[in-house]
Amino acid sequence: MADYSDGETKVVSRKANSRDSIIPVTIRPTLTISNGPDAGKKFYIEESCTTVGRSKEADIQLDDEVASRLHAEIHFNNMEFRIKDLQSSNGTFLNGSSVIEYALRHNDKIMIGETMLHFTIDRI
Image (cartoon, rainbow, N blue to C red):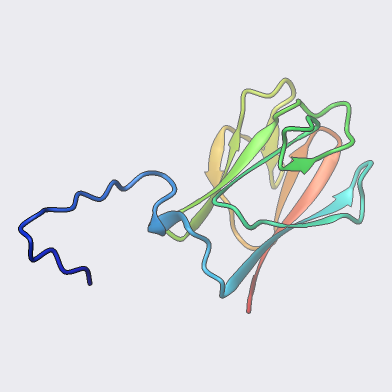
C-alpha cells in the first residue's frame, strides 16, 4: 500500500478498464468458428472489450459479407462476459435467439452473419 504521509490524498478513477474488467490469467475465453467462410479459425479473447466484424478495425475479422463492419462486441466486466450487438444490419443471435446484449456462458453459440462462433471458457 502506498504511503501518503505527506498529507496528500490520491484519487483513483474506476473506469471501464479498471481492475474489475481485467480477464484473470486463470481463464481462457475462446471463440471458435464452427460454420461459415472462416470455419476452423480459433480466437483467444485477451482484452476486456473485443469487437467482431468484417472491418479491418475489428479485433476479430470475419470474411463474411453478411456480417456488418463492426457487428458485435464481447465485454468482460465483474467476472462476466457479455455480447452486445452494435446496431448491425442483420442482428446478432445467441443460441438461436436475437439479442441486443446478453450474458455469455460456456458453450454458447453466436451467429453473426453466416458465421457460427462457439464461445468457450477454459480454466487454466
